[in-house]
Length: 150
Image 1: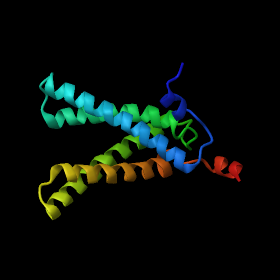
Image 2: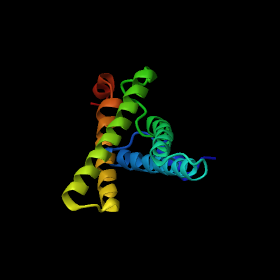
Image 3: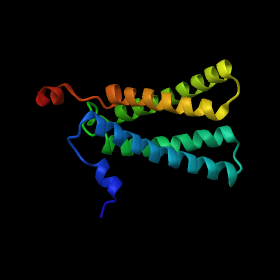
Image 4: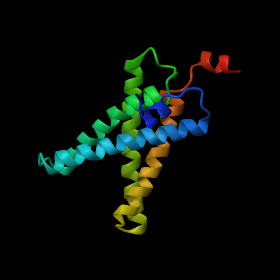
């Protein structure tokens, strides 16, 4: 039996608001996996924090790919070309890392070293930027899908 979250994520024919909520939930789950891996690797395996953060992020990215690719954006233009889809998804992850770094750096430069506030703003900006990249490039609907929907 599927959990309520699994049932929600696998529903089909939803509008853009439900799609966004599903993306938000899937991203939250991936962030939880990212953070758990980060903590275990840093605290118990004694790996340096930057390396632990990269390992955690990659773990979260893998979870995000499966949750988002299978539960949120199922009918993308590359659904039959998973290698290209995966590569673009990794690019979206790199975009998220870049947005996070730049926003934190700018926030600290403008407002001082308020690290928690800077991270929250960066997470919001990264989430929105990566969502748009994934929705309109990685998992965009094919021309045939758009034609059939009219």
